[in-house]
Each structure stands twice: as structure tokens, then as C-alpha cells.
Image (cartoon, rainbow, N blue to C red; front, side, top):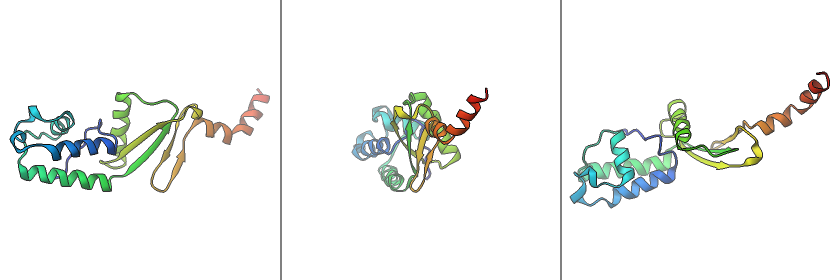
Length: 147
């Protein structure tokens, strides 16, 4: 079964926490979602899972392990860190336009001024205002002199 990740699960570290929660579930609480840890409750709500069996717990563990080893990873360096709502929206955009299991690692670098630098497994895309200003500095100086 393919599951849908909540957009609040944006990084592989959050998937690791979820995996740990699922692995540690005791058989006595598999059918009691109100006793599940927080990450698992959110995941279950997103996927309309009302209870687990030992078999579905094992399948979910396998799924999460496969997800950790095969999900596309994106590193995003930004001028200022997004808040939770912005991160959820960004994660949702990547998952709907790039891949449904995209994982995002975000770091801050205030030297960027604005924009971001996006890294994938083999590419770097500098979408920062800083690089754009440097790349177009001659044009900018020329236009300012003629203004």
C-alpha cells in the first residue's frame, strides 16, 4: 500500500522518528490509536488508519525503511528560516510537483539576502538575490548611471 506523507513530515529525521515509534509499538496498543505516539497519530490521520495489526505494523515498518533509502532529498539554503506553515506549504509544493516523497533539509545563510540555493543529488541551483545581483552588476551600474 502506498501511503501519503503529511506535509509536516518534511525531513528524513521526522520519518526516522515515525519509524522508531512504529517499531516500538506493543501489540496491546496496535488497535488503540489514542495511545499511539504523536507522529504516528498524525500519519494515521492523514492516511485514514484506524488501527494496526501485527502484519500492517510490519508492512508500515518496511514501507518507512524503503522511504528512507529511496526518497528524493533536497537541500535548501535560505536567507531566513520558514515558519511551520510556510515549510508545510513548501513541502506540499515539492511533493505535488516533483515527487510525493520528497524530503527537504533546510539551512539558513543570511549572506543570501533573499531567495535560496537548492541542491539535489547532482545539481546546485543558485536562486538567491545575491547571486543575481552579482551576475547582473554591470547592467545595474549602467542603468543607474543613465537614470
